[in-house]
Length: 245
Image (cartoon, rainbow, N blue to C red; front, side, top):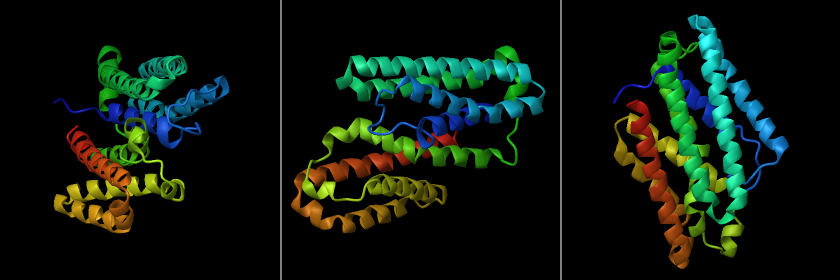
């Protein structure tokens, strides 16, 4: 597989940060937004793209960089608008619509990052980020990928399996998402250290904390197992995709 350029990796980081970590949307994932919220989100993405634009300035290809980034911003913004419209029109299919939309967005970024420079200016393929090596850039992408995006995907794809028990409602809001993020971060660290078996220690710690609830609530036990297996699989796949890109 052809290695992704630094330009493409930076675009992926910027998009993920704008869509997830810096997202202004409140409530359920991929809930349709108002016009004001949508415009604010476009501004967030535009500000994030100032970083790759500054790199194109340093590489001597500012016009080409501006063209690629502008087209990418416009295409992804139109895709977000279409996603909101479809979610309003088909609310029951919202999870599937949102997942497909994010996949299309990734395809747009890969096309802009890999093909755009080839068509306009190859100097964009050789630009280097300030103060970061390629390994550090990959780690930054990996950390961004295994935290908030993984939690949102879990909510969209597996939220229907969540048990509606009283004990679940008493848990601290956001605690489960934080535990999942830490679990995946530890998993990729163990993989990088060549100790994949240590991931089992994380699963054991989680099981001890939830042992009584797992024993007494079959619905929660199934949801817990699905979530844990999803989290580990997501971390492993993300690690090998990013570190071998």
